[in-house]
Structures are given as structure tokens and as C-alpha cells.
Amino acid sequence: MKKKPDCIERGYVIGINGHFPGPTIKAQVGDTLHISLSNNLSTNEGTSIHWHGISQHGTPWADGTASISQCAINPGETFHYRFTVDKAGTYFYHGHYGLQRSAGLYGSLIVDLPLDKKEPFHYDSEFNLLLSDWWHNTSLHQELALSSNPFQWIGEPQSLLINGRGQYNCSMAANIVNNNNNATLPQCKFRSDNEECAPEILHVDPNKTYRIRIASTTSLSSLNFAISNHKMVVVEADGNYIDPFEVDDIDIYSGESYSILITTNQNPNNNYWISIGVRGRKPNTPQALTILNYKKTSISSSNIIPNSPPPITPQWNDFNRSKAFTNKIHALMGSPKPPTHYDHRLLLLNTQNLINGYTKWAINNISLVLPQTPYLGSIKFKINAAFDRGHPSDNFSGGYDIFNPPANPNASFGNRVYMFRMNQVIDVILQNANVLSGNNSDIHPWHLHGHDFWVLGHGDGKFKQGYDEKRFNLKNPPLKNTVVIFPYGWTALRFRANNPGVWFFHCHIEAHLHMGMGVIFSEGVEHVKDIPKEALACGLTKKIPMSFFNTTNN
Ligand code: C2O
Ligand code: CU
Image (cartoon, rainbow, N blue to C red; front, side, top):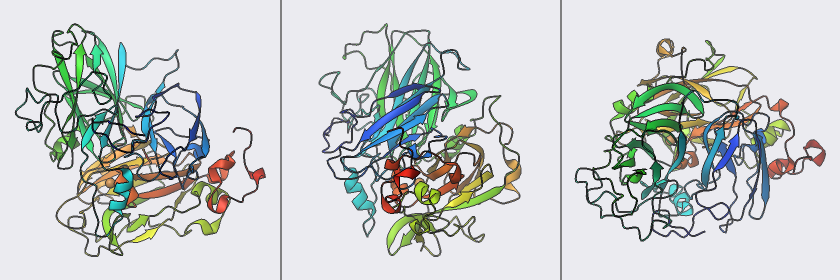
């Protein structure tokens, strides 16, 4: 459909039921959601939707990953997702096929506690902000660019969006700032407050506590979120309670979600800026702004603009500041603790490579290319020809120099699977490295499907087996489903392979994923029951007799 998220019309935005972003789905713990997804795309491409952060216990076929948990939904087809939400928190959903997230296929998913249960913190009311980044080029154009030789990078987004609304090439604060990166931008003019790109304003009463849910479904950008004059207390991360801590701003990477509490204790005759800005990559995108409006002030658009400048986004490359924020996140007392030992450890080296002259990302030198037949079907029904049954490598060469461009930049394509035994404790050490050329190392937010993991630690340089693990936090590591690896650094995480299914583990930067930056985990698939036929009606699982499937629920 046509839409103007940042006031500029772009030919092609993927919406749901005529809306962009898609509708906010609200549920309660224990609810079973039935969601019918019909592919009505005019671009003649497949689709699927992933429910980011939902464990899919017992329903791995509903995870929404094309080629892994299901067949892509072809144009004209309808797929029926059916799954139970078992943990309260701030989640979202998004397309998991091609670059459809960058085309706008996403929305919020909020899971509330049952009515008789209370959150471990108090608030009077809540808001929900879904953050994203926006390009004027279509996703199809981006796909073409990424897979061309010579390689063309998609570049920085034109706009940042808050709940699907942004301001291209203008700033709401232009008239009052001279020290921010908005300085050279003209003042935004919205012809009316209900224009589709006009920001959603947060109306608050004085002296109340508000919970603000913040999730980032950006395709690329790492963001910093701040509200002028208001401290925030961080209480939830990726659907898990954390030990509350107070900050002026938060960093949020693609795939993460947080809840923060603010108290509206400032002068109620003023309004205050809410800002998001880019971190971790040299920004070329203006801050997105909206307003915290104390209801005491009138909201005629002439005086709604706060009279002080918006928060300044911290320096994009101040990684020590980012690390300091990340290191503040600890599990709330009483949260599940990690097992003290692991059964199996993977060391995964993240590199940018060349394959036949094409630029790719690889993990332990393999750039992932998904097979035609969804893994869940080919593993369950033992169809050996569907993918390479060899063991992917658990480690990388100890001599690899992570601080310089690769001595041998060549990698290969592959589609092998890490197969875990049920209930094994798995450690993953994600190791970052220098990119193909020049002196640089990118940020990668890694997301695991089907599980939360404990973040045991981060470190600079190369992970030293037997030494760095002595500093692992086994006392109160946070449970998350997405975690960042910093430039030239490593991140260690631990999880229990206790969820029968096949699960994607990948960089949440959509272009990196598209260029092969992911691996596949599988555990206990023999225990998976009731896969609906429509999940596997493609590739080598297409001809499996009906009697193997669950036919009761469509
Ligand atoms: Cu939100 Cu596989 O991603
Ligand atoms: Cu990445």
C-alpha cells in the first residue's frame, strides 16, 4: 500500500489490514492466539511473520521463519498461526522473509499478567513505543543492491520512526536548537495534527508514574532513547524483569525491548522532548522527536513545542558508554538462575567475507543460505537430501587475527544445523572481528528464537578460553532474547536446549541476516507433534501423506 511514514510518499509499504505499523496485539499470559495471515502482497513474493520473544513451546511450527519453521506463505495463500503466550512482557512481531521488516511489516505484541497477578513495580498508566528505521528505497531495491557485485550497501536510513511516524529532513526542534545534529534542518510543518506522519504525542498528568514500553524493530540502527528532564527507571528487558536501575537515557539495539518507568514530577506548565538518535554507526539520520505533554499545558500546535532543546544523543562511537549501560542490566532477584556448568560450548566468529566476489557475512567461515524445505519438516521426517547433514564447526582457528581485515577473505555458503540433545546446557561465545577492509568492526545484535538466554558477560578483544569465563556472571545474569556484540569484542550467553524445534539464531540487522549472518539450532524435534500440513506444503515435505499431520485445528 501507499503511505507516508515520514511525510514522503514511498510507493510500497507493507501494511496489515490496511494499517502501518500492523495492529498492536494485546494478550494475557495463558492466552492462545489464533492469527490468520493472508499474503495479499502485490509484489508476488512469499511472506511469514515471526513473534519475536515468544517461546513457541509446543508450537515450533508457528515461529514464523520461512525455510525453518514453515514454508513461505505464497501470494494468495493464508497461514494459521496458533500459539500460547506464556510470559508477560513487551514483544513485537515482524516479517521473516527477505527484507520485509525494512518494508514495514511489523507491529507490537503486548502480553499482560493475568488479572490476579501484580507486576513487581507500580505504575498508573502505560504507553507503548515501537521504534524503527526507514528508507525511501524499497526493500526490493535494497535486496538487489545487497546482492550485486560490486557490493552496494543500503546506507543509513532516511528517517527514524516512533510508532511508524517520523520527520524526513526537518526537525520539530529546529527553531530552538543550535547544538544538535538537527541544527541545519528546517522546522517541520505538519499541516494538521492528524496527518499520518505527525508524531504521536504522549499526554500525561502531573505526579504520576508511567510505564513506557519500548521495542526496537529497526533494520539496522542502534538507538538511544531519552526524555528531557526525566530520569527513567529500567524494569524490564526482552520480557524479563530486571533489577531496577535509574538512567537518563537507554541504548536499545534491534530486537530488544525494555520497559522504563518515569515520574511526571517536572514543571507541569512545560512540555518535554522525547528523542531517539542513532548510536554505534556514524549517524546520517536526524533524531526522531515527539513530545511528553503535561495535560496542564494547552495543546494547540503553536505552543506545544517545548521551549528547551531536546536531549543530545551521546556520541555514536562512545562504546564505553554503551558498555556501561549494558553492564547495568541484571536479573531481578528471584529470577531463574543459569546452570553453573555447560555441556557444550560453541565459539562463533563473526566475519565479513567474499564468496565469488560477492560480499557476505559468515559464522565460522560459513555464510548461511536457507534450503527450500523447512528444517522442521526435513528433520522431523528424516529427509536427508533437504540440507547438508554434516556437523557445522564448533570453533574457529585459534590463530585468527580479529583486529585486522581477514588474511584470507574467502568463505563458503552452507546450511548445516547445530543439533543439541534435549536439555543440554549450551554456551555460545560470539566473537566479533574486523570487517573486510579498513579498520572497523560493526555492532551485531544477536537474537535467538525459541529461548531466552542468560547473558554471562561481554569482553574486549578475543575470548580467552579458561580465563575469560572466570569472570562470567553466574549470580544474576539477565535473561534476554537479543544481545549485542560490541566492536572487536565478545559476548557469552548460556541457555538450556529444552524447547523441541528448530530455531534461528542470527544477527538482527536485517541486511546482515540477508547476507548470511545466522546459524540454525535444533533440539528434540522427535518430540514435536501436531505440525499442520500447511506449514510444510513445499519442497521435499510437500508430498508427505496427510496422515502425518494434525488436521484438527485449521
Ligand atoms: Cu526478530 Cu529472527 O527475528
Ligand atoms: Cu550484524
